[in-house]
Image 1: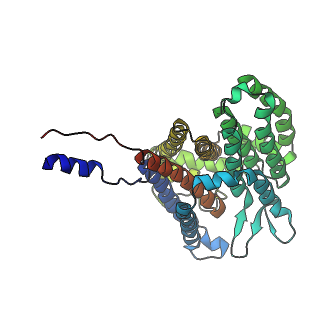
Image 2 (image 1 turned 180 degrees about the vertical axis):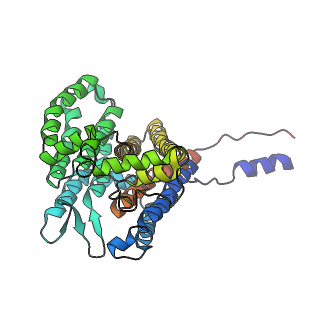
Length: 393
């Protein structure tokens, strides 16, 4: 009898939902690599910015803490509350993208007006817009099950929303982010089961628009430089050629942490857009493989959480996870592709690794939303009644 009572007490003990270890370990590992690489790339160039050698590292750590703090704040904000606010996501995304055009608020860097001046720091508004549009599209698709059986207009509307944001971004100008947002929304629509004929028609009609945007003189020059960067290695092709030299010097095991030569004023934006090239130089093919594996595990796990949400009839949470997974995966692929010379140069950071407060904070917050979804799903599973089993003595 005592054995039976003990078994019942153990089975009836309250169980608590925990945080997903794969999400935590992979995201934390990428953040740790980012801190190391920001230190490696920025200490050498701090003097040229007239700051202390630890300036960029300390600032990077502050942004990490801010992102983690916002994620912890999700403990009191559930995804149900976010779902109720989701209808305003598109309006909010448009509003934040227009903020840099307000005189006195917008901040221009290298001819682009993508930031707003907050006094103590600058914020790149497109990073917030990415998360806002994901939330909005997640709700839109959640309310339209079996998208493949619906009309062409239901597939067109979310892509028109993404296109509207893209038009605003081209005015800043920021074609790289515009392409990423359209790709994220397109991926979410595809995961929602949109009919292939609708996607094919939309793809064909978008080609002329992309071509016109790419024919801007400076964008066309980037494309031509991508085709043959060595044709003008000291001017238009300087960034790409220096990145390729850095990757080539790394070989299999790299030259060692802190021993990169290309980061010493040769490779522009070594601590932001081209941090992966320096990582490849210092850690070689092994470092490249490690980062790719970590991103693969992180994105794969995020997509798995979305599948679980879908199986538990939580469509908004499912599309929210898939949107965040597509965001991180697409931006990581584009950033790595640029560093390896596989894609034309774009001003995109490598998620969780590059120095850049806006991108870092919003990416951590996006992962925090996925962790919140996973926690809610686990709590719902644990709250279900369990069958009592009688143990024989």
